[in-house]
Image (cartoon, rainbow, N blue to C red; front, top):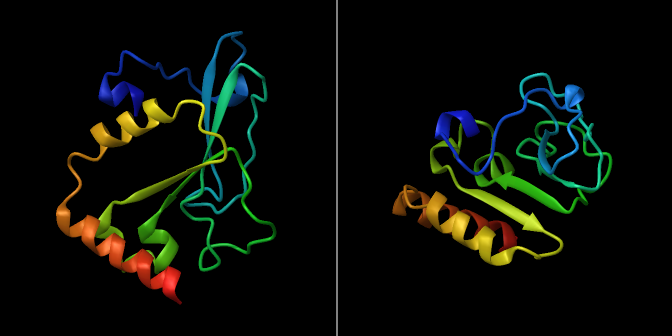
Length: 136
């Protein structure tokens, strides 16, 4: 995605299993992985990086839930959390959960810039669906 967006902020450095540079990094862990469903863990594991857990498919309709998700930074999607893969896919609304917010202003700015293209219809549907989940 960094190459596609031509981002000057980050550079794709390839497979995390082969990452050996001693510099800050961001590792994205998709678990369970789509399409194979394998549960994945971080592989770089150094103090100078950040791990983002993409948990879009971490819901009982996709995989057995053996333990609660309890990571520092987690991303989810409303479409996968509340329905089968085809019911809410057009919403394209994501959720991020951070235990600590050391860079809250940067995250809020990123979300602001990244969500400019999200349709009002998707935002309203996501709000209604999440409210129904909270109320139930």
